[in-house]
Image (tube, rainbow, N blue to C red):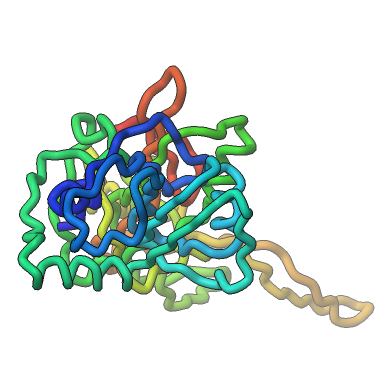
Length: 318
């Protein structure tokens, strides 16, 4: 189970008062301001009056550019940013004199939790029905899926959400990274070309039940790990027969085919375009689970919707 930072703070006697600040940096959420610390031995690294921020687990690390962008929008005063995303290239980060920053990565958080558990101050037995401030009311609108099946792979997002939102005139929106369940299909078969030519081929396809498309894997890259994020299940999947019927439109190719002809004036060489068509009826098909990146975004006037991490398409919650 993912650690709920608000629950940890509450159990350790660190009272946090909610405030209406929404980060313009997607994925970094303000939990509030520390109102009191009832136990001085809990090892809290900041004092009363400090803003607490939480970067939940995600695909992209926090680098110098993202941190400085967050610093520009942060209010004056003391801040404690706890990141469960990787921190990279922060050595040259410029911190404004108006900001006092305590930055924790997953290592500092793990050490702090471990020491608190060993000291008997923390047991991490939280109520899973509670929602963190970054989730808001989203838990009522989308159920969390079961743990990932072994060998499941996740894909890196192609959309840069900050730029995507900025291009559409959005700034202060609440955002939460998620994973959309899909399937990876391996197709083994042959392409039939002109003059009886036959070529063995293998295709890797993505079945995306949220966009309703079957596409080639193309330049989609896998993540080295599966993030511990909320997983959204589709309402329906394509049947094997439906996938097979889509193969001609997805797998067939047009290629140049060299031709030559002997005439009275000599040999003439050239090339023409020919369709190479898949033998879809005899192609072998195997599938495995795959997780597609996305974000739940609270759009003004529309509420929570999904931004697809590969295409940037806006989708309704299932």
